[in-house]
Image (tube, rainbow, N blue to C red; front, side, top):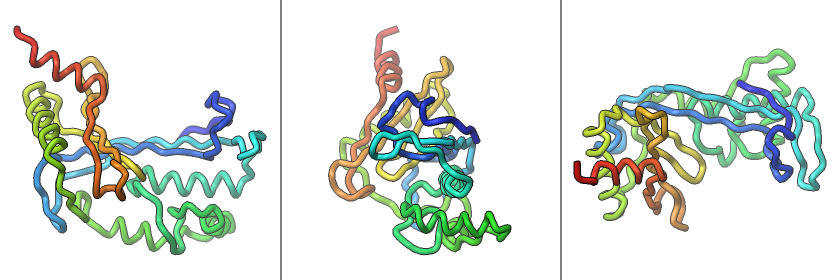
Length: 214
């Protein structure tokens, strides 16, 4: 967990109070697992960044008080340990609504344990449980097959998964240290029903290098 001032971002338009990144190592990520089945998966690494101050929607720099800092930390920790989206409602720190998150944080400040049924329900599931399966379109499926073979031939090992509210990534760390990324982004319909699978520059370079005559 790292704390910083909003000015450290160098972007006055930033209005968020924090963010989190979590990577999960997934075995057989391209397997056609069905809903209810399990993949071998475990949390590999996570980081949380909390801003002591932030810019409000008028562009004014505002310091976060103790309650706001704790509310932000609880919310981002929920993301860091695996809750990739936001809850639509209910008594949980994973709501987008700041008032509900502050309510949970206020109880913790008083010394009460954090009781969050939403997170409790998530972590009652075994790691790697497949909750839903969406079929890839022909182009995305072809991309997945190509990179599954490329990863095996290049010795990249098992990929890491990084999922968010509107997109997700499968990525590998190449020997040079570059991230080889396949990014699933929405195509306009509700996520994750319709999406495209795109390779980043490092992934396209790796594919090109493999195709070049030796």
